[in-house]
Image (cartoon, rainbow, N blue to C red; front, top):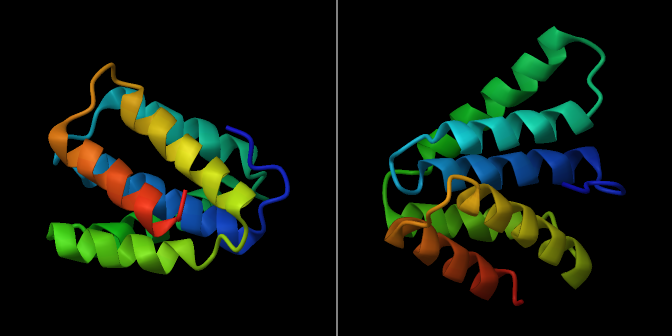
Length: 123
């Protein structure tokens, strides 16, 4: 997961996107959780408290948006605004794809999220 060059705001948006992905099929797989933890490891927080605060805030934001496919799609649109270039959007999409395939299967809900993200990100 290469987030070199991502701003703090883009890292936050990426984490939100990944958490939306984790909630897409209403099944939090341990492989997906491990991927999110790996991503957080790359963010270089000043303390464990800062890491937990950042992560908790992202889970709160994303879980509020996971109630319906329409809400998820709208939230992905908001997240997309933080990725101004095609290259950054592609990297974010690839990281999401890696997360959703990390448990060895992609559910129909996850597939729909990937399709919607690809469309919204204009990839």
